[in-house]
Amino acid sequence: MIESWAVVEAADPAEGSMAAVIVDGTFVALGRLDGRLVAFDETCSHRACPLSEGVLADGSITCPCHKSRFDLQTGAPLNGPAVEPIRIRQVRQDGGNIFIER
Ligand code: FES
Image (tube, rainbow, N blue to C red; front, side):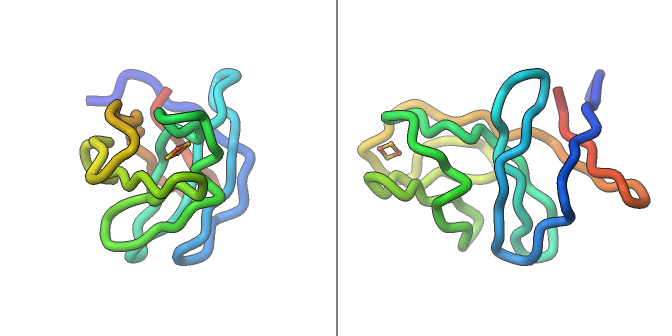
């Protein structure tokens, strides 16, 4: 169970799109894939490229810089060069507000 949620100032993302939002001073990527909101580290675990500029598809996010691909359920790298996972955050929508796990 999620203990604490942050309300984010963000437009509802269109299918396949992403934007960087701030949760408690940390950049988090917020997007929508297969109709579902997703949220995860904005910063790639390899060399810190912005993941919101990558590609959402097939249950994963692909980094725009060196093409590491991360599983959106677990955050684990599906292919390198990244070896460290990214953090996946729970996200929910209630009325016009979007809430992301702190
Ligand atoms: S910075 Fe993301 S794969 Fe290199």
